[in-house]
Amino acid sequence: MEESEKENIKEERIRKITSMYYSRPDIQKTIFDFSKNREITPRYFEGFGKRPDSLQYPNEVMELVKKGATSFHCSEELWEDPMKISTSLNEKQLNELRIGWDLLLDIDSKYLDYSKIMAELVVKMLNFHGVKNVGIKFSGSKGFHIIVPWKAFPVEINDVKTSDMFPKYPRIILKYLTEKIKPELVKRITSISVSNEYVKDVAESEKVIPDLILVSPRHLFRAPYSLHEKTALSSAVLDLEEIKDFSPKDADPFKVKIRDFVPDSTEGEASRLLMQALDWNKENNPNEEENKNYETKIYNPIKLEKISDEYLPPSIRKILEGLSDGRKRALFILINLFRSIGMERNELEKRIYDWNNKNAVPLKEGYLKAQIFWSYRNKIIPPPNYDKDYYKGIGVIPTEEEMRLKNPVNYVVKKSSEEKKIKEKKIIKKAPKKAKADVNR
Image 1 (cartoon, rainbow, N blue to C red):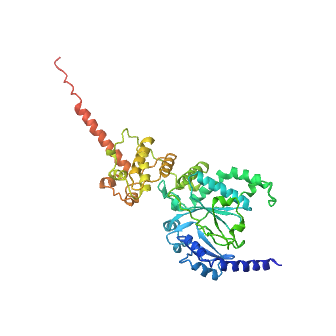
Image 2 (tube, rainbow, N blue to C red):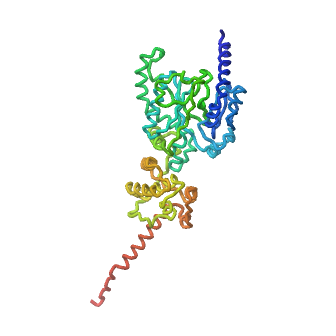
Image 3 (cartoon, rainbow, N blue to C red):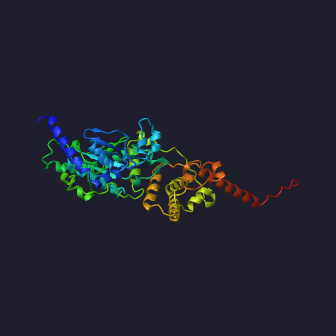
């Protein structure tokens, strides 16, 4: 039988399966729910459909299948309106349209057993960095997809919007995780490569270790429970404990049970992961373009002998009373102000924790620790100027005096200087007058 004939038979078989499989309402709903705020594109066995595209209702999945769609692929990026995406948009316009991104770790390997090992090590490393809520699914062939939802990442780091840093931040995290797990990955692959008969071409374990696929702008991956054209298997969601004993037959499209791919993450739980990845990248790749996006300008902090609450600007005192919204932005303002005026770390931490307890809903302690830790690993930067949206965005309106002085640091310095002058005048007034010299002597 010729190769083309084999391909035709294979395609015909896949299309019969797709028609029955995607007719399931639960499959349609799962793909539709996952596609919200994402660019989604159907694949017609060999070729992809138009981009951008999106689903308006669950039944549309089956309508596309009737037109020849065999699988569905989604973006890692989350968009305000996916249909507004265009190749004519510049980076700034795309950033304005993008509302976030999921970290999608796409494990690719020649051998499923090797992918299993890497998946286990990646999840273990994520857990070590405080990321406890992780989604895992079979790719449909010989790999796995691991997802850390956008909700788990900090909105901003060092005055840089995290949503604007796609694909730079995900790439840095991928490189960081790869390096961290590589020694154990090679060790474990080496231990099994000798006994596995199907591994015929292993000269060195490093030549066949799985890869984390590098992300790129508008990168797509197979949607959960979408079929794979080459294997006719479902991209089924798994629990971590199931990976070790997982077999492709467990992804039989007519036996899979529906589970959520996106876990209910804790807000900001991936902050430490991102910060440590950025630190690692800055130390190991100091000249990379990515580092220019979060390196800060040199700022010489002011060391005040005494930091009285009377010196603090009205806007800062308002924040310190506690907030119901904008707590993360407020934390960024407070940490950078306190460091900029030379506050000792123990006092800074005490003030931050006292403030957090006054908030309507306190920030998680782990998030506070991560932000303080990150700040002290980097150069000191002043808090945002009053004309930035930070203050109005959290319901704090700077006074005319604050606006005139431009920055909270300037306000503290001015008030401290005024207080110092007042004290000096009082000292001069209290000093005894010198007796006039007797010129007749």
